[in-house]
Length: 198
Image 1 (cartoon, one colour):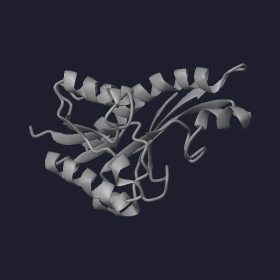
Image 2 (spheres, one colour; image 1 turned 180 degrees about the vertical axis):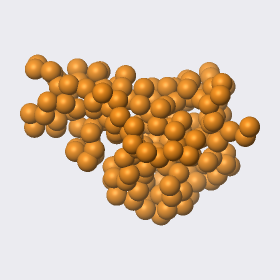
Image 3 (tube, rainbow, N blue to C red; image 1 turned 90 degrees about the vertical axis):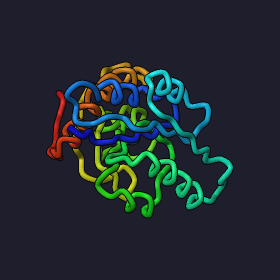
Image 4 (tube, rainbow, N blue to C red; image 1 turned 45 degrees about the vertical axis):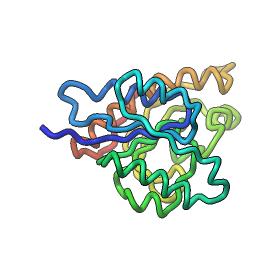
């Protein structure tokens, strides 16, 4: 069987990347074809290399405000790997509508909130400040609007009294590592229905 090719984009330690890559084994319909970072010091690059996954790096800093130039270099690196799907896993650059359109329907992202609540940054602090009783994470298809697009999966955790953004994040992260691989597998199999974890 020919596997779907998945490129994973990271900016940091790559914990979700590792969870995704480790899941793509055996009878899984996909395989990781590339781990690409916009930061040369991203810890996930070494982890991917240790797993035998091809890596690439396109440093955004030399491009300054030239987002089109950065994204052209990003697309060159991606297209060389011929991915069927692109998984954003802690990739901290906002992609332009032009980039998203080039891979329409093929980019997934994981976000540490129950979307549509708390798009953007500082999600855990904002959920606690709002007095919410639960938080979680969402996997969605990437569209030109930030943290928008069809929701493909959500996982929920309770917010406990005395929670800080750090303690809440520490409980959400293992759910991210469970949810993202489940959704990726379903998408690779051609399924786009919503999946939820408690």
